Length: 305
Image (cartoon, rainbow, N blue to C red; front, side, top):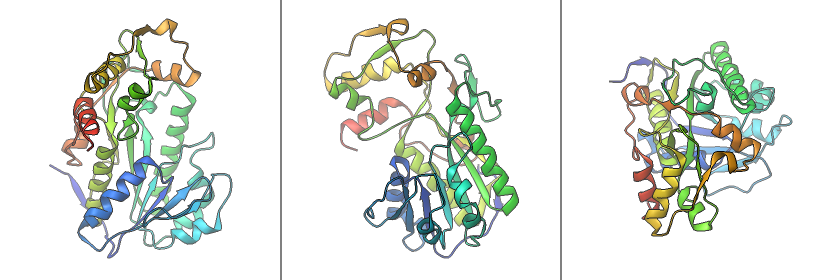
């Protein structure tokens, strides 16, 4: 059952996405289809280079190095804001360069920040939830902790609702083990005890839509942080093997972790092992996952869904 509190709601929705990429596009597609029970939402956002408008989405260039007047103008009328730009050593560049523009938005009622379960660091395979201490082991995780802190502070200062969505490995059409197996680039690296969650991009979109729906309807949950993860954390080699099974090909050979010759980023990835709970996501936010495990998710992608 959702524990909700009252908030204001807009007559017309305008979603602005700093970093209109894979997740934001999935959300925009979903919102355009549902319209959250109101008129079709206005959707705008940014990409790093000067982009052309994508379908019905108006985009501006923002590379995170300076204030961009075109972004400030495009932000006007925004009711819902989604942040998916990776932070740097100083935190979130969208907040750094467009803080004044965002603080001045009287129409803004909801801010969603896409973070990572990497903020928890290594739990040595143990089960953790949103109450676990933040002990990032990588610079990327530390930057996310900083950005989360900055956005929460902004929310307190301005009275805006800020929700943090911590994501694991993201997969979906065009970005899954099926694609790497087909391309011949998949590797089954074996490290004892290595386990982690995943999430299908559609379930990210469903989660964000649910959070926005509550806010737009005049209610909001009492929590502000959610682990957006699947039901079954699993070793990475199992996912590759299942993708190969779906494709009817032999899985790639197993490679011991000590012999894998990984990049520094990949090494940091294998340096963390944890099972992440999605209990709050389900019980408080009321989300039902379309793809509760990697098996349903990969099977749907394989069949073109």
